[in-house]
Image (cartoon, rainbow, N blue to C red; front, side, top):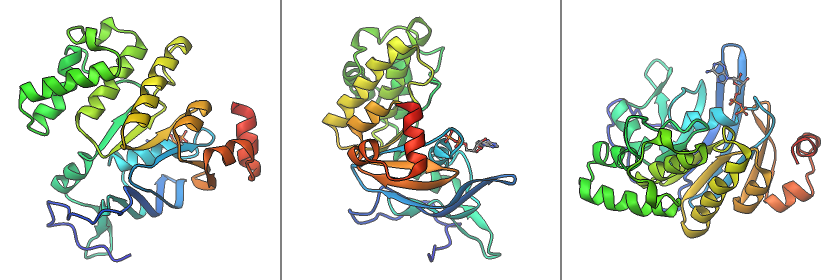
Length: 271
Ligand code: ADP
């Protein structure tokens, strides 16, 4: 594809509605000699909930990290709402868009990690208002009001004044979800958000995410080993193996009648 020179572009152009929320176009990602994503093509439409499944090491987390611009691609193009994250410079070398451009794109994306990464020295409410106030410039009273609504949504309205360390892992993860939503992102990336939790704390976190999926139109890109959850919330499942999509489809089809051998083997092992 013809990508414009982005080196002097600070503000990504507005794009018409109907543009995919996320698009990977022949994306190659290597770590040394290890080809982690091998000419990967897929897109996620606005409002879709897409879950990435597949064996450990198949490249799922790398996809989310590339979208957050925490890693650089080696070839191809990634678009967020039609806006390319990189371009070829005059020497034909693939380079990222400039930092101001990328920070504008990043604001569209919320991410929740396996490790909750809350600020331990800030109270719960402060964790949730920090980025809206300091990154988006939302007036503090407005940010507080919105944060309280979000903490209510995740079932933690009574914990606003506590420090994260006094909460359970599941509660901390629910704060992290509220914090991501406080930025009003267009797309929410969920990277194995229950993997670090004790088993009895997993259900509360998944139920909060089910509620968000049911009551909002936010686009979700999910990496999870919780197959029942994936089946409940997803419109589409992408099955990865060795950096490629080996099968994709509606959850009912993938979980009930997988066609690919590797999907069948993977699901037998995890279900
Ligand atoms: P998954 O999420 O499907 O388990 P990952 O995207 O985490 O897979 O990893 C895909 C591959 O990339 C693995 O082989 C992993 O070892 C490698 N990898 C991931 N991050 C790095 C890194 N920062 N440096 C080197 N190799 C990495």
